Length: 125
Length: 110
Image (cartoon, rainbow over all chains, first blue to last red; front, side, top):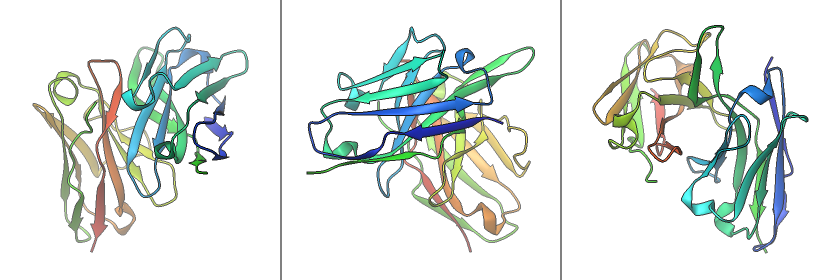
């Protein structure tokens, strides 16, 4: 069964850095794009970033462009989010999510079919 | 990268049907058949309910259905049950290869 397990969250001061990890199992990680999605306390979902299956293509929401970097290690089945210059408004639960699925005949991308349980990042002095 | 527009709340009685709308632009909802819907119960991760506008993943009740007209997508839940009470979010692929969510809709089953 598909499992996504995030780690690396915690309390960090404004301006500092943090790296999140997402360990994947139960599917062929190197076949699929992967996303980070966040949810501030009491607020809605916000898409953060996506990385292609091979790591060659990356896209970000404007608010994190230049501060956050998404990456992956297909040999370790792990997704990362390097977060620099953190701000109070980055406080949220961060989820990793798998991008769609492939059947024996076709692939269906561009939705989030499995999610991790989330890891909380709190940016506060 | 503006959020898609959803009603803040909807409500219905058990057995009734409700519809949640999700309005975007021609650069997202209207331009692609990559609208998806997610259910989130308090303290839980979101769950995929509909993908590619109207497709249900295996295991999702056929009481959930999706559609799209122009720049507006819709999620309909028929035969409301108490366990349907949750937050619902739409999402779309965009012309910038990014993704965008709606602001979320709180469904109350009276």
